[in-house]
Image 1 (spheres, rainbow, N blue to C red):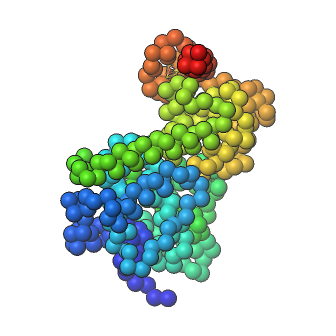
Image 2 (image 1 turned 90 degrees about the horizontal axis):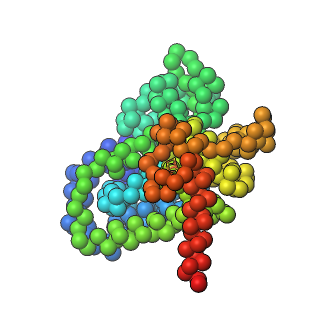
Image 3 (image 1 turned 135 degrees about the vertical axis):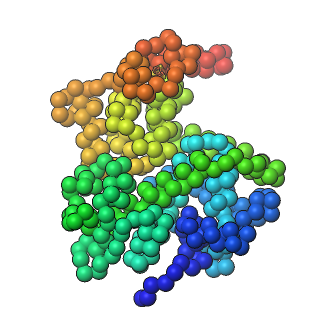
Length: 353
Ligand code: SF4
């Protein structure tokens, strides 16, 4: 099949690419004042994008784009970003960026190699080429590889484990699309974060509020599902931040993962559930993650069950966001949790009594 340029359908599928933005600029389709009716198709679809991003992101699938709906689909992307920005919820921004990047990856997996190469070269400046005669067939400059793979913790992504010749890494299609997902996620997240505050038309303000509360509702129920017996409302600010960073798709520093894992284990959360929590939102290898969690639980290795860092050490590692009133009474996040739990159950008894 011959190579060609991107089509309107491609803009709808990959609305973050430069050509898609140019198309919107030239056609002047994106005018917030013309789109201030929450029942317009692009607005409905923009809100749907945000709602979908609140759902578990493990197995994201790409929605179908019906024929004739390409422009609406394309328009809904910058609108979703603007609505997200207006909510002011950075957790939502990260989830939306991750969701959009995973949808793009699911679509790229079905594309011919030339299209993947074109998208990566023209939008991200990758030095990437395809040679059907070599195995694996994609050839990527190691600097582009490292910029994106450094966030992945699995052994299989380490540069030393890649076939490397003359500064180029040889990759399968699967790996290239995974690296692109990371590049796309950063691009979209940066766009939301750096977007100037725009005045959302009054007619859409209700929708922004509705999306905000939808997100916090789902976040609460997701956390109940993910955390089981552990009660999120008793978490100290430091652990709540780490947990939301993780479930929002943000990479935690090693020490952050260690202390969050030790915290959850000490609260009685089973190893299996902690592994599921990590694997559902990151690319962590399940076997490796299980080993690390079991290690912190004292089930393998030195057989020491670790405790989370104390408040003092959390501060040293910049993991203490500054405590609330209760923080002044405790010296460790575990003590905070236990104290808060007591207060919550007292308040619960008070309400009943
Ligand atoms: S003071 Fe301690 S419990 Fe409170 S947020 Fe900081 S580290 Fe966490």
